[in-house]
Structure formats: C-alpha cells, structure tokens
Amino acid sequence: MKKLIQKPVLFLALLICTSAFSQTTAKSELYACLPCGRDCDKADYNKPGQCQHCQMALVKKSTVVFKTIEPGKICAYIASHPRVVLLDVRTKEEFDGKAEPNFGSLKNAINIPIQELEGRAAELNKFKNKEIIVYCSHSHRSPQASYLLTQKGFTDITNMAGGMSVMEDNSCKK
Image (cartoon, rainbow, N blue to C red; front, side, top):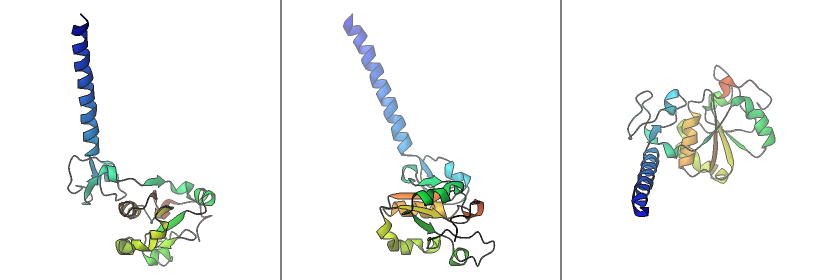
C-alpha cells in the first residue's frame, strides 16, 4: 500500500518541479523594448527583434536593471544623498537653458548628451560603483542612457521618470 501512494506523490512532485522550471525558463527568455520611456517599455516579447511601436531593439528583459525615481521625490532624495551623481543626457543647449522650453537643470549635474554617451561613458568610470541618477526633459532619452550605463558595468543607476518637464520642486535646480 505504501509503495502505491509513493509513486503518485513522486510523480506529482516531478510534475510540479518541471512546471516551475518551465516557468522560470520562460521568464528568463522574455524580451522587452530597449527602454525608450514610452508605454511599450512595459510590453513583453518572446523573442528578440524590434519593438513594433518605437522601432527600438528588443533586449532580454533581465538586462533592464536600473531603478526609477519620481520627479516629485528628487530634491528631497538629493538632499538626503549628497554624494549621488546627477547625469543630464539632454543637449548642451537644453542643459544650459538655451532651448525652448527651458525646464532648468539640477545643481551639480554632469551633462553628457545621449548622442555622445556611448563614446564618452569612460568619463564616468570613477562613478562606476556610485549611485547615478540619469535624467532628461521627458524621460525618453534617460531610460536609454540608464540601460547603456548598466550594460557598461555601472552598478547603481536610477532613471528619473517623467524628466525635468514634470518636475515641480525647484529647490534643487540651478
């Protein structure tokens, strides 16, 4: 009698383990849009290719590892984390307030435009293990920059969601 009960229990355990393994394997093989700051960033795909909405490359979802902070929390966060590095990936004109609209810039930010970041990332190597908050005007460029930095080995990257265009607290702007 004992042997009759053991076989179904063993079979059930094997079935559960196989199912859990299949689900884990499927999750690790999901792809997502290379972060572009649009709603398509939230979609999952089963294979690599190109996002049908924004035409960005699809990357393994597990490689999108940066954090996000809301603009309404940024000034308080900077005040309580004075060593955080701020990276503005807008154009020099936007950063300097010479483009319309002028959304301002954060105090002590470093400006490396997204178009130049790949070639200039080494300038940030001294911050590789420090927290870097990346921002732009509308949070379309900063997720791309955040992803690029994590792919280059930066360990603590945070993207400011929404960007400077939705930031209401001016206390940390220059």
